[in-house]
Image (cartoon, rainbow, N blue to C red):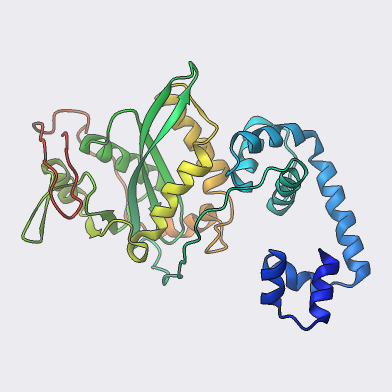
Length: 333
């Protein structure tokens, strides 16, 4: 491939054209064009040494990629760290190269999806905003039965630090409020604004454009003095960060994991947050969320636990029928 890149360059093709012909990333094409033959030989020798360093994990990675062909190198890295406590300290690039070598050696190509264009959004001030969203996922249990889990994820918009909490029951206002309290404790503070979908469980109805919150959530807003911003579903301009966070939970944390019980799942999630989600460099900001949070938490409002338990009686049961504008279909308080 190195020789092909050089040959195409001698024929006068641009980097974009070479990338299109070879299927290589333009960054790699540019790197190869800058290399001399001696530098490329040294590069190959280095790659071989890196592969040998991870050779003991070849069968493990091969089995995982075979079972989950669309897994990412980041997900493989997390599996290696979780299942092999003695896993050596290597760079993410080394693991990516090793996964690519496994795919090529054993003919395990990654399924191709439809690319989606994203544009960077201006950074918000520290402590200003957090985004909240919900998801669900079918997991295999220890007895091979499928279990549907529901989760809420909250993400600080500036630092990108994440928190996730799981439930076996469909999302209720009570679970949402409890998860909010857990997230604020995890962040050691409260952001000034929270961003949600308009069809989330916090909205019970809409009256000529005026949003009506569920009674329990309305009281919670008053107590916490929270500002709320509701946006359209699948709106990357307003809440693309949290939509990416939901996908991150679905495609990085949950695949290949067996459901034991809810307590174990939430504990595994906390370890994953510490080990991977908040510890690795963010692909957009190129910063580590955990390190950025050390700055952001100084700008969050102080957090004190509620003076009353959320799990106690908070109101009667409501059944909210489906309305237009993608509003939620039911709610239990």
